[in-house]
Image (cartoon, each protein chain N blue to C red):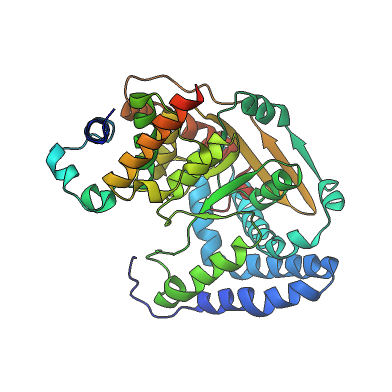
Length: 302
Length: 90
């Protein structure tokens, strides 16, 4: 685990309030009231978190280039913060909403691509990024009878976070938030590769977040104007098993969402697994990049 | 096929599929496979495919657990059992 220089930061207080009193209140208050409070909180956060907003603006400028005006960048950064807060608030109410009510609140497109990929019988890796609607997409798959799991990280190792956050708050965050997922599988577990393979052999679905380096196998690639390390271990599994890779985007939250499944990726063939990984990670990175550029304010890692 | 033959072929698969620089004896003498070459969970999946190709068997989803990969002896016995089961099934 990465060590941090600081024992404690102001951010820790925010995380504590989110994970304990807010979470408890969210389990009993009416859903409408929680959403209203979340919206209010989003506006307050957006107004106060000027340093974070400035960082987002800088990243947006790098990603979007000079074709976007300063006003547009500022508006996008405001939306980024609002969407992030709405997404975190939604994590606590998502499972309180009944299936029919929930599925009536959004749109799902391209489901035929997922079905076609599953028809091949080798399982599907749904490749996505940390978009606002990722938990909603997981709930949709669960309710629609598609067995799946996503890979999550149990321990934090953020060098920018305090010792307290890395040691206690982040693992607790993971534990609490992962309760909203179905069957979380932790990247730290020794059998993670086997569980992926098992699920694929059962012609099931595994969700892979391409934008986080949760892997022992990483490759750095140009991404949104800078460079980023991408996990590539899953591509070695694809090479070995012949599983299909289907890009997915989920944006919004339980009150309004859009989940989009894209056509299965035509992966390039290669003589060796290393060549396969190198060739195809570039294709997937480009897809993720285009997904983010379409909806930059819904990408949580901006 | 004898246990010894199966074991030797598994070791060959390990060396080729996982691109190991170890000598066969080092693998034979290891008490645990993961201690020996830090086998990560992705490597295990590659090993499974390699073993399936080598022995022309299929490891069913319900058998995929870390237990059968804990050491060479357990893995060898498992492969022998699969070979026996599949031969009888045919």
